[in-house]
Image 1 (cartoon, rainbow, N blue to C red):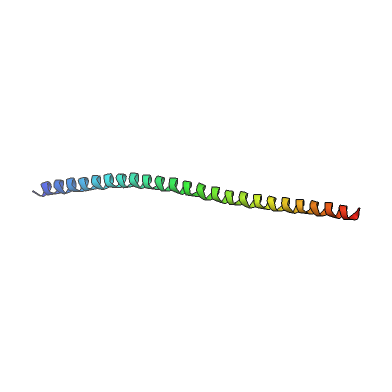
Image 2: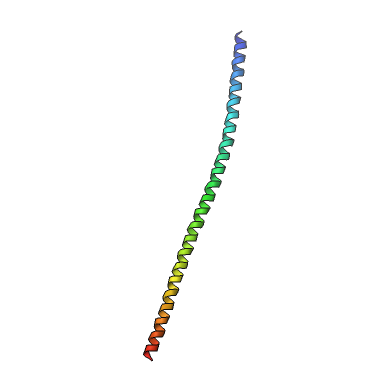
Length: 87
């Protein structure tokens, strides 16, 4: 009787251990998939932010070039006017 009980207990323990191992494997697979999805989302967001930052830098550079060009044109017009007055 005692031997039957211990065999039954060992069987129950082995069954529970197998269930725990299966659940743990399932959990790690799900967690890996979730982390992979999150990393893809992070990479996409990071690329989007970087492209926005680069776009803003390019706009600022273009505005700076336009400003310099305006002052160069203005300076050359003033120089021409001064040359005409000097004649």
